[in-house]
Image (cartoon, rainbow, N blue to C red; front, side, top):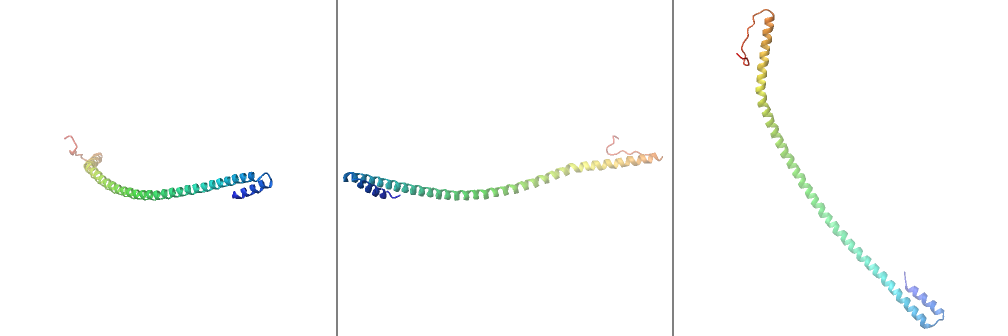
Amino acid sequence: MDTRSLAGTAAVTSTSRRSGASAAVSTTGRLNALADEVNNFYGDLEDETKIRKQAEEKRVARIERELVKIERVVGTETKRRIEASKALQVMFEVQLEKLQTEFKESLRESYEPLQAQIDALVKRVEQVRFLRLRGARGGPVRWRAGPYSAE
């Protein structure tokens, strides 16, 4: 908005009234002063806007730099945690394998004597059954003392 054109219009209007030259000069001077103040106001406003815009651009640039740093740190931390997880996984698998081996060995140690006892018991049951069958057919029955008998 050009305020000087306002001042020129006001000057023409006031001189056409024939109210006097001093009143016209006074009004024209005031309008010119007001126009200068408005121009200064708009100039100051534009300067402040430019300053705020520059400050905002600097702030955005700083935030972008900080964001890049944070992204690098997050990437590094992610890699570190992945490596740590892999190491834990390997350690866990080794421990699990060791525990499985120990458990199987312990189970085998407990199982073998039980299996020997079961085998002896099955053999004894077969003998008893055989002897009963022989006894039912009228043949002589001979009892033998086994490893678990009281004799």
